[in-house]
Length: 226
Image (cartoon, rainbow, N blue to C red):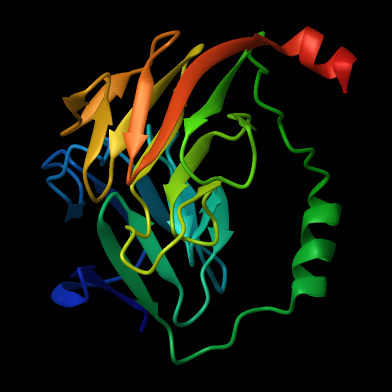
């Protein structure tokens, strides 16, 4: 029988049995309730599809991650670590083996489904480095959720072992972007960021000694220049 173990900073808090499925979110009507401002009201869900246990992000504000990578839909494997806000859910399925990747590809092909592409915003948000050490001078925020931190999956990598794995998550919200502090000290325009904040043109983010400016770039112009 499959189960999920809810953890916070490496400490196990509670176990949940995955039968027909469950929902994860901040509101009390979820099976897995995570009371944290970085978690959406209905953040993600887990459903059974035959022999598979599938995780689906429910268009959450800050995204759902598996083993450090943002996912919209993911077939869980034994040992996978699901990150929702600051909490981790470790998947335990020691019984039946997962179907082979080739078999999954065949099933998708036979279903005749074509992935639906999300609407592309006309404007693209960017982070421009004002001061501090960074790999690039400018970072395009073209993913659903972009991370700033030491993690290998972060768009803006922070250098140094003492830096937070994920300091800030910047997520698309309609045609705008919302910044959420995930760890460490983060300032926006010299004000301490404690939860979520809608980013505006010219906002300055200070993250572990790195100063970044949020700005807008016309997507059409950007694609033409490329």
